[in-house]
Image (cartoon, rainbow, N blue to C red; front, side, top):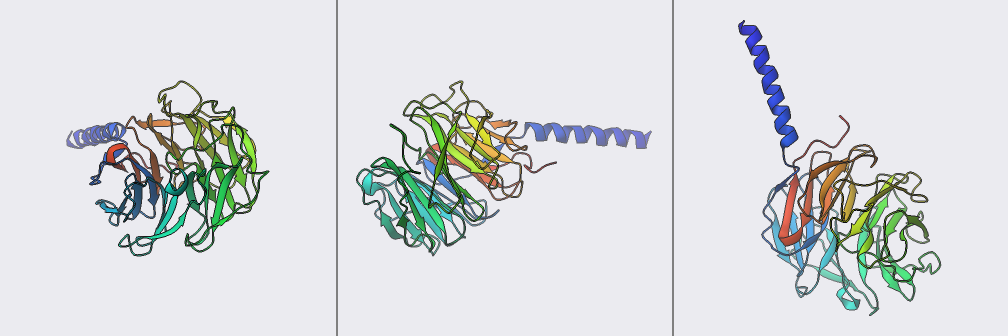
Length: 351
């Protein structure tokens, strides 16, 4: 009797733990110390991550739990939409805005000081995102100038940048542009592939380069566009073949329309693949260490896929701007009003 009772108790306890795990929140809030909009996020490891946002704000954690806020000097009017960190000391940040409001800064001492590396020289320009293949080689892209999207490359960790000239491959449609909503409208994979996504025009598109950003080819994607606030806001690839595009309409957060698409041929062709939760998604990211797992997030909430974007499970409905993962169990999200959250959901590798 005693052994049997103990066995039943163990089963009941296991069932309770399973139920609690299913009911556990997807994210747990962390104190950011700021109240500005946060849009940029770069996760280096399970303990080191950086974030960036409005009013010249940058955040950093080196223990995975507490965040330190810092202000980039003379940048209080800038909106840092994207950030790329190499380690706890080295990071590159990009501000988005018209003309000279688009800038690149770099730190090599943990944010104790920042060096202005580049200011957009074109009054018609508007930078959208940066990404890096490795510590030295990176890419930045921006909205069309004189009918073609801007692409710049660096081979020295962001210290200097060189423009790419591919007027035919980078040619924009009327009213076409990109969304600097989360710094994830541009992504890279492997050692030479890069993609960026667009909206606003009649068709949403993803541009792909297989030679480190030197030449480009665009493909239409079945996500609704045709309005200034509508299109693809993010693109994420697990490798050179399988990728997810995410988007919607930031003015109609819960719009009932296709908000995702997937590709298995490096972005040459795309098929509709709705993301859960339904509605506007501003970021989709592969989960480091889990080949088939992606997390998507936006003002409609967040969800995850463990099968390369074929099916999705809702995490929660907390509005956020972007996400990033160090491993299948450790990641962060940032969003409106200084929101910083650490992932607390199920492990995102295959079970």
